[in-house]
Image (cartoon, rainbow, N blue to C red; front, top):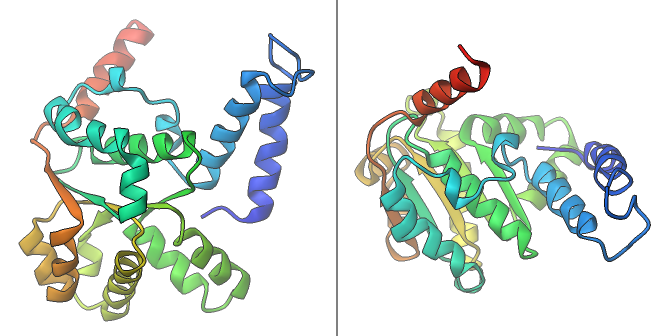
Length: 237
């Protein structure tokens, strides 16, 4: 989670690079496309979208293309409907199948059309919540981010939370139920199955996933191997 000071500092640096460094207007035209580029980039930073995916496009999707074309892309084409009715996505699959990629694509699309967004992993959320015990400003900031138009919660069902952290399980259930009740969409990614999530977090949370989440089962195969192959090609190795 980024503090307001971190966002302000990043915005200042990005403005120098994107707006005043713009080859078209050098910062002189308030209607230049560089202003929109600045907005999207700074909001992606504030949303904690992984930087590698800030400029992702459909052309960058190669692994699990079927799931992307049949569910994720149509979902993004209807983001205003999803936001109005609280429809979310549940991405199921092993490590390296593209879950974080798809989540980031959803959030960057949402930001591009004016929605607020927040990406976090379950371990990071655990850290931020417990940090709030001793830092009221951090607790307030987290509450703000968790009420973004679109929330992406990655790494649900991580091993470290399976064996007794009842506090965290309760907090996850609270966050998801509050968003469900308020009609706010959440995108969830997990290595577990729906039945596995029920076993970890309980029947109440599992029941939330039935009505307002489109489930996407992603096929095995680590796309990071493709990234390595591309890296070696780019570096001439």
